[in-house]
Amino acid sequence: MSAADRLFAAPPFPRARRPHFLAALRETARAQQARFPVLRALYAREGFKPASLINELAVGRLPYFHVSVFKENDFRPAAPFRAALTLTSSGTGGQKSRIVLDAGSLRRVKEGAERVYGALGMVDKTLVTNYLCFTYDPRQARDLGTAFTDELLTSFTARGRVHYAISRPRPGAEFRFDLEGTLAALREMAGTGLPLRVLGFPAHVLFTLRAWRERGWPSLRLGKTSWVMTGGGWKGHQGDAIPKDEFKAQVSSWLGLPAANIRDLYGLVEHGVPYVECRRGRMHVPDYARVIVRDPRTLEALPYGRKGLLHLVTPYLTSFPSYSVLAGDWGSLAPRCPCGTAGEILSLHGRAGKSPAKGCAVTAAELLK
Ligand SMILES: [Zn+2]
Image (cartoon, rainbow, N blue to C red):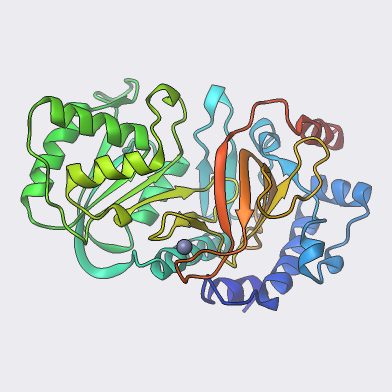
């Protein structure tokens, strides 16, 4: 068993960080360096050696690329590599990452996610649950990252009916959000008496809620085994954005489920580790990853409470060079949460523009020559 396998087989929120993580990260850094010439070039230039990852402080010295680098370049490993899954991120402005997972990376990312959700009380394999996914129908968008996420998020219970809200009305047509079909599916699923999980962008959830109310239909009573799991922020729907507490209050009263069962999630396809809200509405950092908040100008690591760009590190990924990536999002960290579950707390403060940390992307382009 590799050190990375051991890490992802262990609980996600231990009281104290374990040495497993550093052992796994050294192992992954070595494998990544051997596989990807671009990392060899980066590490040589930065004077970085995987063996130097001996303590938590050293993790902050692990070199990284800005996430845009993975959207602008194709880093698929050379033959004889066997991909178990290829994912395409749903990039804005036509920029997409194409990420490949080998069998080990795929197994670890799935196992890690299930343990994170399990620790936060959201896994019950015996409970038959219906799903309303405000995402692309995976039968029509097989390699999109969202399809993989849906497949994963609907695997934490026994699956009842699964409805996808975004589909092509005809083969070859553009994807569209099918409001009428979604409202009909929701009515039918609410009538079954089974628990329901709603997955997707908050803007879509709110849009559907408002359409439901405009029709004068009564609020639902889905109960405490039903959940709403949002992600992706208000991208492209900034005008509709409402504060998180207000969103939770509205959705809770509309669907008739506890506000504590409405959980937001942060993640990116290039990184794969989910940061999921606890019952207190705070995103916990699992021991499967490290988050370093960086000053947007100097890229120095910032202390707790300071806002900066998020540098995300995880050792599960051996088949794509984004295991250390600077995200295009603002965030800050706090040491702990009053909910009792351990792990640092990640707060999000929106998306960064194109300009911060552009230097990293330029560096990658130079290295690839
Ligand atoms: Zn918490």
